Length: 251
Image (cartoon, rainbow, N blue to C red):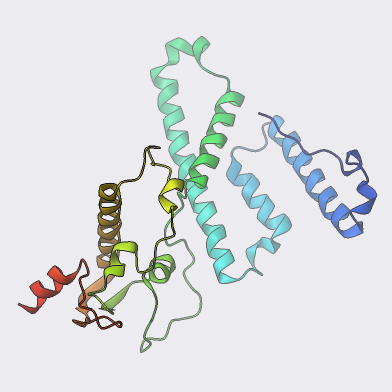
């Protein structure tokens, strides 16, 4: 529960690492040891201080990063800030409610270790702050058109006044706009372990479509234009899941 880096000399044939790698590793090792000493002395109130010091030490205060890297860094910082704020409030309530059972409460170090472990698990599940500050520094063109797939548009977290959904009658809407990899359901966390049936596939596709539509509708402020054709590229008749929505809009 208390992992520590070893000195570079403890590795076999460490002399083959090279001067640059050895110097970088030694700096990280010394910096972590310094933070550990200050944490034991009570000079570090939370992990936010460690994050901030790491940014100043190793990431040039965040000033020389590309926008996507800066956005990812801000996601981490804002997520950590919200997490430790909530954790601090819950800790105060536990102290008030369980003041008569102080002997049964875990130590501060154990509680801190559990808090950090839960935070790491939360990050691994993909829980991060949406739309982190600062926003993009370069102004976007007001008269531009954004052309993207469903995945690209959702990943970019964009929002527009109008949406033009191309090929709205396609059956690919059930799979998120692209062909699904064979056996992809086996890697889902909620997979029960039993054989995957056609009913399970239909249910999973329907749930995915509902999530996609709910997300896309939340990213348009005025109007959605459904652009469709009765025939697919292959010449066959379109039978996508949005046909009922198209017919309702036409009527």
